[in-house]
Structures are given as structure tokens and as C-alpha cells.
Image 1 (cartoon, one colour):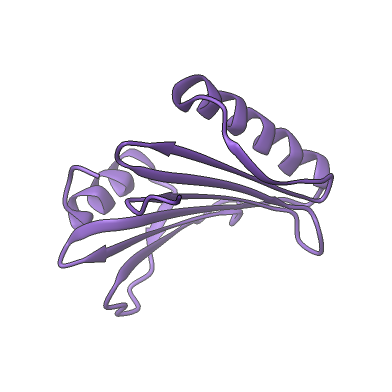
Image 2 (spheres, one colour; image 1 turned 60 degrees about the vertical axis):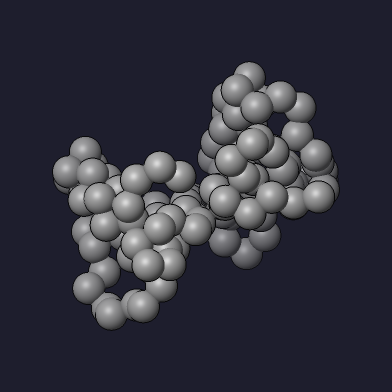
Length: 127
């Protein structure tokens, strides 16, 4: 993904002052969360300071909020990466997988008990 994991985390913390870094000693990841709304977390998974995955997680109170967020992210990514593989396409559960030469982006909507949108950026390619 281009930059060392620790540098990415430092950059995110600098650009987003409402994020705080979980100081729990994880061997394989850095976890940050939004201190104001507490509805956003990001985890940067790494191996020897090389980024392997980035996982963004958004939660909301209402299904409409996450549905609109999912659609906006989907439309934005579709413009950049082209048409996704839609693994699931229901009202309460949607998955869109975008591929490029650097890896995979998995966009997931789960509007069940706690409405959630998750974005996983991975260096792993899915076939």
C-alpha cells in the first residue's frame, strides 16, 4: 500500500484530530477510534510494518444512515475501480468486491442489530 504502517497511523492521527490510538499492545495491528461520535474505527493490520489490510468500520443508529453511506461509497469506488462483484445484494446485507492490480476492496453493509458499514482494503487478491 505504499507507506509503512506506523507512518500511515501517524498521518491519520495528524489529519483527523478526533481519532485516538488504542494503546493496547497488538502485535499485528494499530486500532484507532473516533472520540466524538464513537461511530468510526479504523484498524491498520501489518506484518513487519508493511500494511496488509486496512479495516474501516462505521456504525449508525438508523438503517437509512448506513444505507446512504454504503451507496455513496459504492458509487465513488465504482467510478474509480469499475463495476464490482456483488456477492450479496439484499436490503439488509450487501457486499461489493472491487479488484485492482494492488489488491481488493470489500465494501459491506449489515443493517441488522447494529447498522454497520465496513470497508476492507487488502493487498490480497480474490479470484
